[in-house]
Amino acid sequence: MKAIVQDGYGSSDVLRLGEVDKPTAGEGEVLVRVHAAAVDAGFWHLMTGRPYLLRLMGFGFRAPKVPVRGREVSGSVEAVGAGVTRFRPGDEVFGFCEGSFAEYTCAPEDRFLPKPVNLTHEQAAAVPISAVTALQALRDAGRVRPGQRVLVIGAAGGVGTYAVQLAKAFGAHVTGVCSTAKKDLVRAIGADDVIDYAREDITDRARNPYDLIVDTAGNRTLSHLRRALTPRGTLVIVGGEGGGRWLGGTDRVLRALLLSPFVRQRLLGLFSAERQEDLRTLSELVEAGKVTPVVGATHPLGEAVEALRRLEKTHARGKTVITM
Image: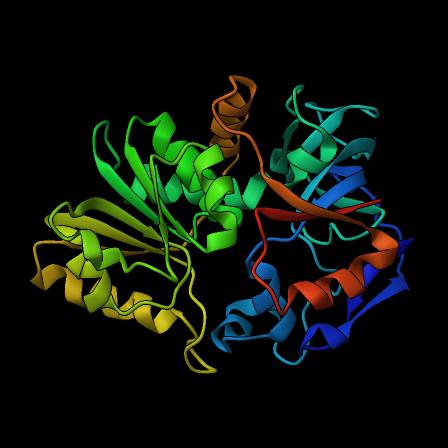
């Protein structure tokens, strides 16, 4: 079968369209014919192998253990292994997996759920990792409550577009931070206010600080972010860019965790988990019309490598999706 393959770590030049063996559903597993797969933020870390901490965590030291990229998928069940009870061939599903940038992928049945009926496969593929991350940042780490003032930094990105919508669904007053070109998008998905980071600093509105900041951009210092918080506000750092080769953006998370016990503000780093129950919650919100995936661009598998090379140099609008 055709797939986007990576034989070593590096820039997008390590990616290629190649032929690999079609997977087989083992006991408790589901083989899915991929209709669409999305690019999540972790894709770039797995492509480059940085920070090096990832390699020590079992993803592969000299090359990725799983050579096919992609971890979000929407498609139809092709076959099921022994013991599978939730699905049968022909069912439309979406969920988490390894190796979704391919014509077929395989994973345990508890990694999938029925695809929301009101979403296309392209939209459904854009949900699992980014939306679950946003949900855990707001509900679990941020403990968001109705009436709170919430600031989402990186509001037009994959996680950010979900964070804005979920914060509104939880009853918060939401301000999104984005570029000039994406202000209309952030307003369209429900933000009450928008800060253009090229023209205004998040601390310019210090007289009305935020109860919760969800930072998905990863390029502001802790001291800067804390100045925009209320005295007992909460900061949730989602991922991180830049930093050294070993820790990357996680060094800022570590500093936040070390400082938090000594200040009144809660300073947290989010290490999201791919939980089926959270995906089910999101599926219900999507079917209720409270959350809508933002798909910024779609590319067929045959053009995916070149598209990913271009995307490496830009900031995506919503989610980028690869179709089969």
